[in-house]
Length: 611
Image (spheres, rainbow, N blue to C red):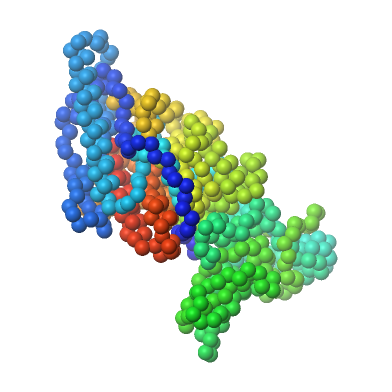
């Protein structure tokens, strides 16, 4: 099963820019007719019920009222035809002023409720969020919207969109076996295992490739056996700050196997243990020599990587860390050699003799012996977003950047290319606050703002890669571009259309609003059960992100009203992260994460019930 992407990092991240107090921005100055409707609807609005207390929060009772932003009033007027324009008499102007005063009161109330909800969550550090109406592009709620947070694995949603719009959902990655001067079953020249950047390639696929090579007549290589991973830039790990034995932080290259992890297996043997290194998949496993393990002295660390020993990546294992039998994943640092070594073992079992592999490019003109195609890209993306596989995100990001002409030499340049694409794709004003270090989010140094993430998700739902509204969006009456920012407004708050104008912009039944290809690839988010269960029709689909004292959730929310939103919620306590001595087991980190998750659920429930 693919690995999850938790991580730890001893180096503090750069400070986050924070400009002034948190502000919650909702709505725009209301036009006359809309203001009259707003005042009437607001007068009839009943107080919302309080929300339940977050698990693990302070035992002191804290009121957690739900949001009742101005936009909730908009639902009261959704199907009311806007009145015809009238002359602005003194009495009408007075009504407008009264309505604006009521709007200001509701704004202040919503701000207070948001702050109470966050304060009651019991988490330290900072929280920011942005909520955008899919139909209009209006920023309905925002807190620290222009301030940069570590996105963690939520950035995989953007990487998925990047790859999907570069290659299409039916794209397949190809891995080949080629041979030079193959005659009568013998390759007089080199035999090469050539990777095509497939991040899902595993030992089951490798076995099928060996079967195909046998069927094609290959029996022996008289020349060298080459591992060719040059399809993508190669690096020995995703993030240098991670623990050496973190299986979710493997090498990346053009020839990958089993998410570039190897299974360390041990069994009791007499007074000691027998160790083996396995390239393992669901149905097939092969013992490899490219990665080795040896028993070390008692009393030492559980695992120690010693680099290359005798041509193999070598791990020293303390006997104190081993039980009677077991297995655990370890990262691979030379994935092309690892994959070729596993192929050699599988080929040997099928009567094909190959020498030990070396890295190198396939010779020009080498004949195709066998070929494997991956499953379609949308299947790969679904697995990446479900299991948060870092190797998948990095390989896809590198491949997409290369296909778009960037040919980056590493993860940071490729992430920068994706950021420039995102700026155009989501019509972002600039890249300020957006500083991605890779495509997986496995870095405490990456940054994105809540507004940038939410706007990108909204663009993915209603706009094509050409920056134009999709046919589905046009049919639903979606507004072409996000509203212009309010001059001088904090947190980049945007103007929203008037009460009736917002409903008119949605056009058809809200249930017909477009989703975009990314929506259905994201996993549903549990929003509560029993008394905390959301109303019928409410659904959230999102990508989570978790680092030590960093938490994120970004995706789509269908509200009880039938409206659809794009949202991003980020929380971090980088001071506690920097102060932690052991980032793999930092004290209080689990409680902090659970409280941040509870806050996410409460925010989503509040938005879903009242917007």
